Length: 164
Image 1: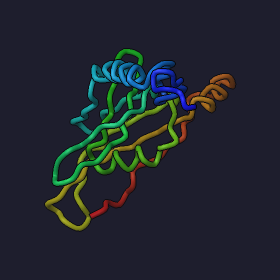
Image 2: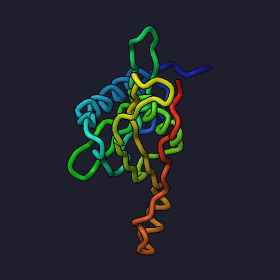
Image 3: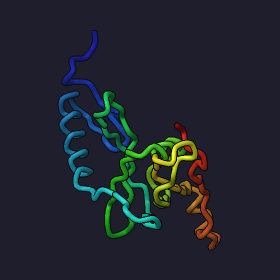
């Protein structure tokens, strides 16, 4: 006979939450864990050359509502040693770069650079925001650090062409 909900063991609800108990208890624990990330400082670069570098400490999601459609954006939380930054990719190019790095894991070293506004190749009245993203897997970073070669990183540069 199946166990009742309050007897179910929850092994993994998401990447950070492991709870044993009822499903309701696991939802409460998840809500508590998410509240911690709400206090992260949003990374909103304004000037070309602004960037952040640190350790990926959480991967979340953000529901972006507007412009006639809803979409869920993959959100990175990056700890630079003094601040935990939330990186919500509202701009198309940053969104593409984060999706290109969807294999990113907690503990990876990441760097994000805002390269500024660029004119569209097809419409001089339209600009887009440019970004670059570099990521180094945590396991590779540890091996390179042990060899004394932690300055090299794997990069995923921004696409040079814009989608119209």
